[in-house]
Image 1 (cartoon, rainbow, N blue to C red):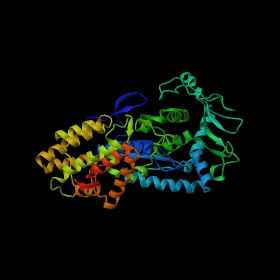
Image 2: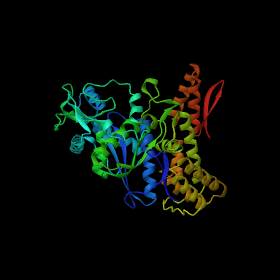
Image 3: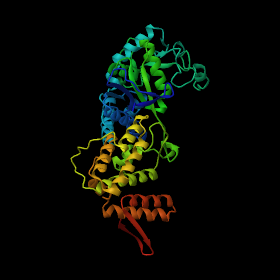
Image 4: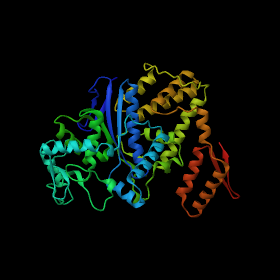
Length: 460
């Protein structure tokens, strides 16, 4: 079956054909590296990790670029607050990111360029845009892109320039011809540290955010490549601006397929520090293992809104345990040399689901179908297929025994702590937290028993 991908540019699901036979070039906008990764970052990195894995399974050689934005207003502010060099901050946060995504089974990209390593390419592109009349210098020293001089602007967001202008709330800034115009090069400010400034033909300063991705993607993948991905929040203005810059500079199409993962909510509300529902990946990994978090995310299609909650994570943990329990019911060799016969009916269904815009929920349903067969028949062949298909998604590669033992690995001291916390929550009439603790323990086969003498526990 042919791979079909929803293209945000055409707003249709299209048959995918790479520009270069058997080679897919893919760029995904990565982290602005001033703090620890949060669950929203995990969501987009997971979506494109699965994309990359499936493309490789189909036999394509994939060159996957996921950048690091290591110069930005927030980065400068945080480095100044901590009184450390920018590079020290970004190195620290990059290391933390690598640790976090590794815990989720996310493979490293082929290339991970840092914006600060590609400033010459950015300056060259800005120079080209200026020569073509698409960029202009402002009295304040900035260089801006003249949006109205690029007729195709708004094609990705599906809005005309006039519609976008009508929604513009920000007043025209000094030296900016139009509110939609965006900065390509920011002039240096006296208040900014010296390691945030570069010499350029336009004066001392630093690149704007949008030009970074255009320059890095073109440098590593060429001026025209197959797939560009990122979160839906980047579709406008970031990706729209990338198209304007890149196509304005080169004069030909930039990207064939644009992929965007859906928004993430926490308990049905937008994640926000002000709402107190902001979670880093590390926060989550303190309570749930990485494979559970991965499985949890793959149960939702990458383009659908994603609701993050403890209840859903608990349900995912129990569901993943059911898959491993099925594998534990047979004498499954640990050699890992499982092959997939794609003509086998369940494998063929899995293949068809993944080929229809990477439909991981449909693929996961096949895993449960196979788990049911293993439980009924104790078929070694079905168990091997279950493990092999799970492996294409980065799942079920631990031994069943080690996963199930780890999932019930709370020691007695920790169980006692949770019981005390639950009792305190009940006394404070915080029944939601009390129930949450009960569910957490139940997910790890620890059952609580309340009586007039207190609370005791047994292992299921």
